[in-house]
Image 1: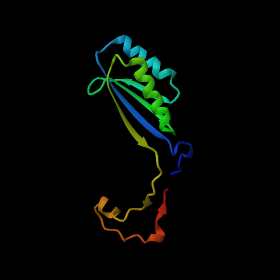
Image 2: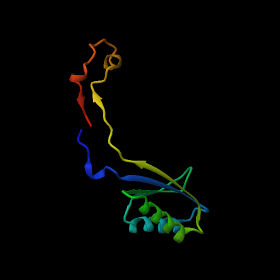
Image 3: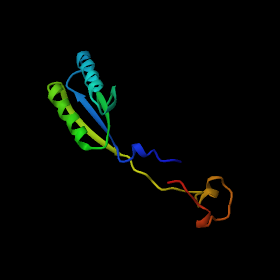
Image 4: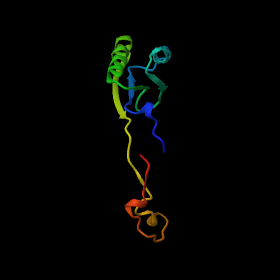
Length: 121
């Protein structure tokens, strides 16, 4: 695997919104708000635990805070709650083959020495 270097150190924020009432005009306005916001990568109208979801992809939490502040300024009367979840993008080191690979295929294999492993980081 090759790391996607331009996406490292970025954070994806999921901002879920509960509205006070279901309103077609509010949904249209929220989609337009998402369209004109630079760091919003997509927006969804939802049915269930929350009414709307925005995804912000940025290298700084300042953009998320600016997005949320603008959301409250423009739609504060329509909003019941706003929850923010962050997903940091980091690189992980994984080595193949796994030591317990034989257990996956239900047959015994010889153990792998450290010099036979290949790094995928």
